[in-house]
Image (cartoon, rainbow, N blue to C red):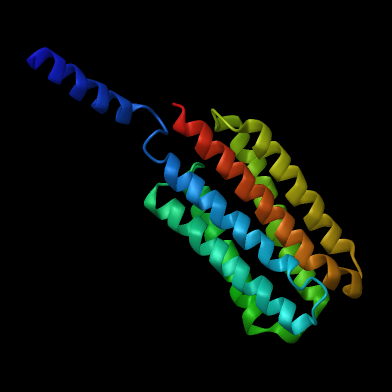
Length: 188
């Protein structure tokens, strides 16, 4: 009887020693949160510049807080310093949008474009050290860089209409990526 009990305890402890297993629920929750946040910009994509700046700023602050929290707590799936850097960049970009919404659609497009290019480069930089999830990292990195470059080149009217869509697409892909990663980590 004691052997049976001991094997159950060893089995339970062994399950928690597997890499990635203990944090899979946090990764899934983070992915779902980003999916939901990614839907926000689609609600009013052609809104006036001021309102769009507020929506984008709030979404970036919320996403930045999640990424920063993931990096600080060590519950993220990337290198924690990249999570912290992306979280801080997202918080600063969102704060700037909320503080100066009258700068116009072009400045908003450039700020978001910069954020997307930096996030895309960071995603591509992590591929070499990632054990899992390389395909999604590559897709997310390329999508972010392409969207960011488009926003740099767009005229203010086009940038205003595209701004919400670009952010929503990026966050939805990030959310899907993290959701699939979390479900995969659950299998380990």
